Image (cartoon, rainbow, N blue to C red; front, side, top):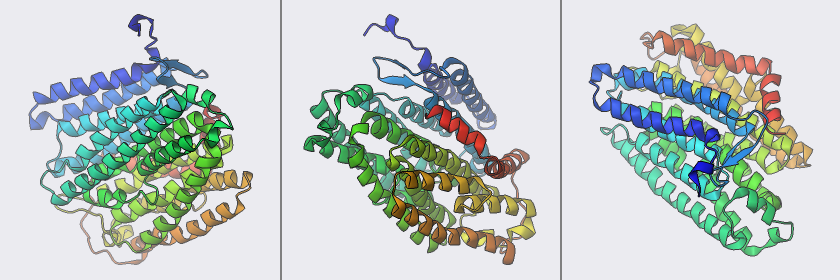
Length: 479
C-alpha cells in the first residue's frame, strides 16, 4: 500500500484522539495528585479538538473511503461521532467529583476513556469486517480495565472478570463469523460484500451460518437477550462513574456496528437477520421490563431497563427500511441522553463512603431538593415513554417503522411491554414525592455538575417538545 497515495484527511479525528491519549498518558506520569486536574482539562480539550476536526474536515454530504477502503467517512458517522464526544464529555464531567471523593481520580481513568472512545470511532467508520473487529477489541479491552478500576473493590474485580470471559467468548464468536463470511464471499470489505451478495447467494447455507455468528456478536455488544448476562453484574459491580460511561456511549457503537455490518454489508440477507433480530427484540423487551420490576438496586434496575431499550433499537433495525434505520438512530441518541442523566443523578446523590444506588436512597428527594427531584422525574418519564419527553417520540417512531412493514403484532408487543416498563419508572417518582426521606443530608455536588444535570434534564424535555430538529438531522444523514 502506497502511504503517499492515501487520503488520511477523513481519519484526522481518530489520529488526533490517539495522539492526544498518548500525550496525556505521558504528561500524567509527571503530575502529582494535586495537579491531576490538568489531566482532566487536557482530556476535555482533546474532546473539543476532535469535535472541531470532525466538523470541519469530514465531508458534509459525501461518502469517502480511504485506507484501502477499510475506513469510511460519511454524514451518519460524523453525527454519531459528535454525539459520542458530547456524551463522553458529559459523563466525565459528572464523574470528576465522584472519582475524587473515592481516591480514583487518576490519569489512567481518562486515558482509558479516550481509548474506549477511539474504539467507538473506529467502529463508526469501519468499512471492513477487520476494522470492525479492531474497533470492538479496542473498546472492549478499555472497558474491562475501567470496570476493575477500583482495585480495592472485590465486586468490581469479579464483575470485570465476568465481563472479560463473556466478552472474549463473544469476540471469538464474532471473529469466527467473519472467517466464515470471508470463506464464502472472499472479501472483508463491506462495500464489496454488498456487491457480492445477491438474492440467490443470500440463501447459501454457509453464509447464513456465518451470519448467525455475527448476529450473536452484535447481540452481545448490544446486551440483547439471551446474551445479556454481563449487563446487570457489570452495571452493579463497576464504580458508578464507569457504569455511567458503559451505559451510554458504547450504545452508539453498537448501533453503528449493526448498521455497518447488517444493513450496509449484509443487506441482501435482510430476511434472515431480520428474523433473528425479531426474536432478540421480543426477548429483550420482555425480560428486561419484567425483571426490572423486581430490582431494589437502581443500577441493576437501569441495567434491565437498558436491555429493554435495546429491544426497541433492534425493532427499528429489523424493519430493514430507511425509516426503520432512522428511528433506530433517533432512539439510540435519545437513549444515551436519558441514560447519562439517569446515572448522573446517582452520582449527584452519592458522597464519600455512600453510594446512592438503592431505590430507597431516592425517597423524599423532593423535600431535599425540589429541582433535582423534578430533573429525575423528567429522566424517568422520558425513559418510560411519557409525552412530551423525547423518549415518547423515540418509541413512537420505532413503532411506526415496524407498522410500515406490516408487523402489527410486533408493534403490539412493543406497546404492551412499554406499559409494563412504565411501572418501575413511575415507582421512583412515587418514592421521591410521596415517601419520607431516609437521608436528610444536603447534596454535596459542585456547581458544574448541578448545572450540567439541569441542562441534561431540560434537553430531554426540549427535544421532546421540538422533536423535529433531531429527526430532521437523522433523516438527512440516513436518507
